[in-house]
View 1: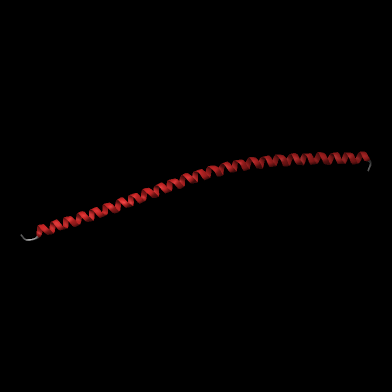
View 2 (view 1 turned 45 degrees about the horizontal axis):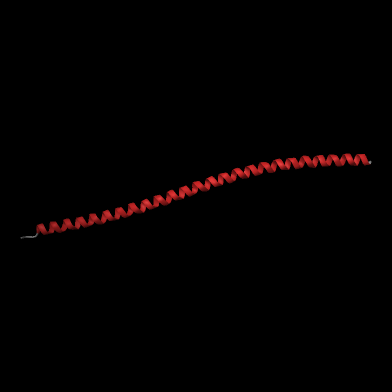
Length: 95
């Protein structure tokens, strides 16, 4: 090969490398954009998860409060029934 042929082959290789680098750059930019979108999706998902977790905690708190209210009402009813039973027993006692 002559010197001119070597130079032409070298220039073709340099051009091909430039094209490859440009393609790599485009792909990397695409990956970076995808990565950014995924980060945003993860951020939104984490925020939604926090909100759901707070809702669950609030509902659990409300459930415990309702259970406590139910237990208190049951105790009051039992107490009222005992009082009624006492009144009935007193009324049935012979004078």
